[in-house]
Amino acid sequence: MKSIINYIKNKYLIILGVLIVAFFIFINVFYFKGPLIVFIGKNVITTEVHSKYIDDNNYKFLFFDNELHDKVLKISNVNLDKLGEYNIDYTLYLDNKEVKRRRKVKVVDTTKPDLVLKDQENSVACPNGNYIEQGYEANDNYDGDITSKVKITKKGDTWTYTIKDTSGNKEEKVRNIVRKDETAPVITLKTTNTKIYRGTTFTEPGYTAIDNCDGDITDKVKVDGKVNTSSTGKYTLTYTVTDSHDNNTVVTREVEVVNQTIYLTNTIYLTFDDGPSYLTSQYLDILKKYNVKATFFINDKGYYDQVKRMHNEGNVVANHTASHNFAGIYSSTTAFWNDFNKLNATIKNITGVDNKLFRFPGGSSNTVSRQYNRGIMTQLVKEANAKGLVYFDWNVDSNDAGGTTTADGVYRNVVNSLSHSRANIVLMHEGKNYTLNALSRIIEFGINNGYNFATLNESSATAHHGVNN
Ligand SMILES: [Zn+2]
Image (tube, rainbow, N blue to C red; front, side, top):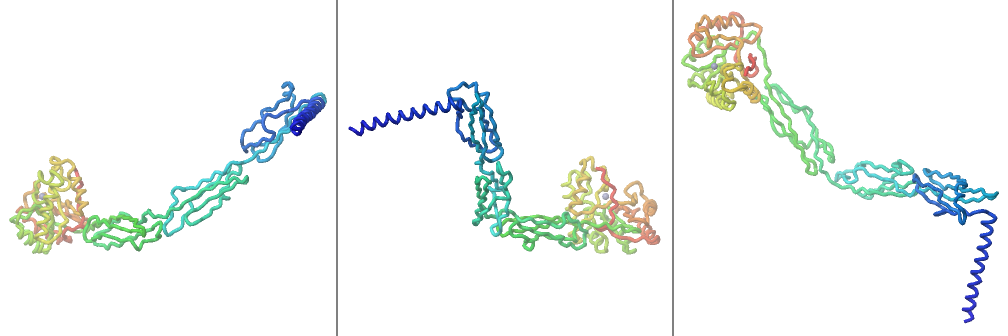
């Protein structure tokens, strides 16, 4: 009971003491020292570097008029862009009294640096190789570019990138390296679109195969295909390579075997179209007598024994289409090649030769074909070249299928057109008596004037007229 009374007595004594002290402070502060500047908010302000902290006069006066506000002198050395501790001093001069208050501003950096790993989502390395660093960047809001300070800790295929700025703010990124090889090797061919002449030797121009994981695997390349240099045409070589993780690469090389045209000057190529006929044996007798060989552009007209004889005696049997029927062969390219192939099969049967030589009925410059199919000659020439076939026109015309119907006329037409400075491809026709009767004299003229006689082949001059349809 007594202790409770003591407690109450003490409590009042404490309150009385506090009131007395408060009274003296009040007198001391407001009477002798002037009004008290009271901050709104904390006495010590902490703000982020580069922030926009503004101390907007956020203070007031206890028990005094706020008109004093304007009389406060404020001096600040705060630099928000530089780490450090700064002061804002507030001073009020009033009736010879000086009232001072200081606020502290701490400019700090609590922002983590920005760390970026390049290719982080796709960090792939060869199963048997090293991961090649794809790069990273570290930028700090205060320190700037601190990429050079990034530390990399490697634990197997887990690489940890750590960066700390000067204020100790830390950022960390992890790169998980995946082991796989899905990249195919690269085959590089030394040259492309090789063109070589018929009869020459094809030499592989060379190649390399480089793989991202295996390195140089050139020795693993398999080459398929063959170039037959004895026959014109396009050949495809296929290069295949597989790396040790089953990635496969295939590339092809096209090699074209072409004819090299050899222009034999001072030469006569006798050519006879539209045979064989009942006169063929007599043509052959004359050629044999002078030991001169000719080229026969035949149709499929029977007389196979005569065709056989042409070949056996060193003449060349060439294709002038089986039917020689303009309306049929020039109706479509398919019709033309069907007709052509039929006769070529017959020629092969009789002579054993895979014939590649032909003459278009009417020549390549004919315009008759236009009435059956516009542009067919252009198309046929293109296709013939693609097939490796060689077609011939002429540069000496006996006119024996034109207006000339006498042996004298045929003879004159031919010999007057011959020239020593070129290959002379002479157009004549079989089955005509006047041509047959002119042949001996034409051959004798040639021999007496120093000409050579030859048969056409894939490398001969072709005397092309040019296509008009
Ligand atoms: Zn003809």
